[in-house]
Length: 464
Image (cartoon, rainbow, N blue to C red; front, side, top):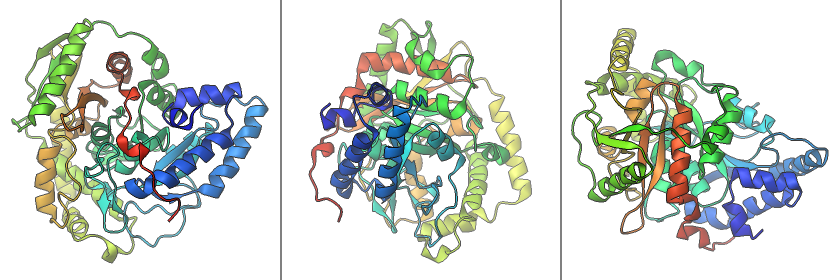
């Protein structure tokens, strides 16, 4: 297969080629590493690579395949967001920490490696995952493969840029306020946030509000379904991969452009989300406008988020190397008292008790209020100005972290200047199979995996 075609073939197809013997794991991993060397200098998606280790593990995968090993991800390369540990690698959380190498893998990475996948490197993120853009003083600016002057989103922006550019077929990610769905929208990817505490290793995150979940980013719905089947085990009555192959029943879908107070939305974003609504209607689903009234959920969300940030800050010993707005966030997080957290958790329970699906099966919203913004838009800004700015950029994602329910961003199309836009599908508790089934139906119609960014054809010098 042509290397460019192989780079964008995806997890399921690459696995088929490896199992059939028409592709060797060493060839696949070598192609991925060469592609990273060529394209990463322009994108800054990766901040660390495992050249020698990944190639050695690829040779081991070849031998295992020859022995008839049928693990579901055997020989598939992937990237790891720099908040997940890889044994022998430093986990920086997007900072300039001088911490040593980790002694063992995070649970998420461990499960993927047990299934045969091969980590090739660590991807960039903003400091402590605080922002929906991927820029830091320590690691520089990560750029969007669709337009190098635009952000790939955040906080899983390095992972999204790597997948969108065909550097890897998938990457790990995390979502505490939209950090899977935001970069998926910015980079024309499918991004699924699963139910709170669904995955191994996320159990501790379910305490104290449980905003954040681990996950993955990929181009295709079937690839994402396979990966979550591996990560979550028998979590659903039928596997998500099976759900991706089944047409959904006729669904009632509520269309809304507000999850609380009205917010300004870019005209092209609105048009593209309405286009997705039209496609769903043409597919036989019933789409109708709805109004959502979650109440004033932002203050308790902020309290729980600050408590989460305080926990993340414990991993950083040398805080003097952090950006000023990160240090400001940590100082603010230290002010959260137990009574404040108790109040926030009571408010969370009240917001969760509100009806969101009266007369509908799913909700449809924009993923973001704007197309991908320019890199550096909030460079040098303080915590408050940055927070106010990003709140206008991404007002649609955080509520579903607060509720803990599954949500997904699907590619909705492109603006007139070629910037990706996402549409968000919101489900009730434990309903990932419906999201997967409907997203697969949309993918067959909109055919977003066939679209490739111009930046993937950019040639840059190898290694330094």
